[in-house]
Length: 303
Image (cartoon, rainbow, N blue to C red; front, side, top):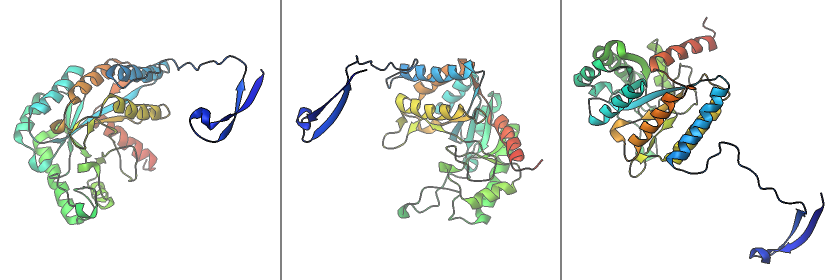
């Protein structure tokens, strides 16, 4: 292959300075995008990209595990009815994070006939005790509270949820705003069989964990769906990580009371696609917490 070199001035690039350019006399071959590489930020590109990922797992005989957590439930609402309809239509287990202090008998009665719905423990009253004026992030079970206060609320919350929802209650604690202080984690340990569910995949605490990863809401300004491109990129990150660790489930996070424009449309598309693909398996929080406890026991040498 013959190589040529020449000096060009920045004036050729509408600037100043001189550069050395090395070029080949051979014809230029344009790179060809990978098969299955899709450009765009619309629904079609999202579906194609996701299917490409799932096909990769299917070709290797692997399965991607998903679970679904929805926060801030206290009573029946039209927004909650939509989620229950999605769950029933696509056969996807739903874990409702219920706020104990405000949980209603009406919600318990509504869920009597619901299939594949489990109740998890969402704080006590979803109240922030941190100092916003100091720049502290919101937390109900944060470092500004005493162990005595938090222990009382944890115990009372459990009693309420077990009383209302019986066998559908799962001892999985979801701290409001997904933040919890180490002191509160120790209190959870004292409950004996609790697991912890927050956000992202980082595990700082020695407790069985079941994380959420994909929040579909854009929270700043007008609350709405994060958009197809953002959803694709967030799922792309998690699915790439699962290529070397298929045992970790991917957690979908929703907040039915805050769903804005585009959220319902996304959920329908996402549930339809994932429920139909053979490489995807949706699991309940109960099944996954049991699995997390077994893994935790093995990892800590308690066998």
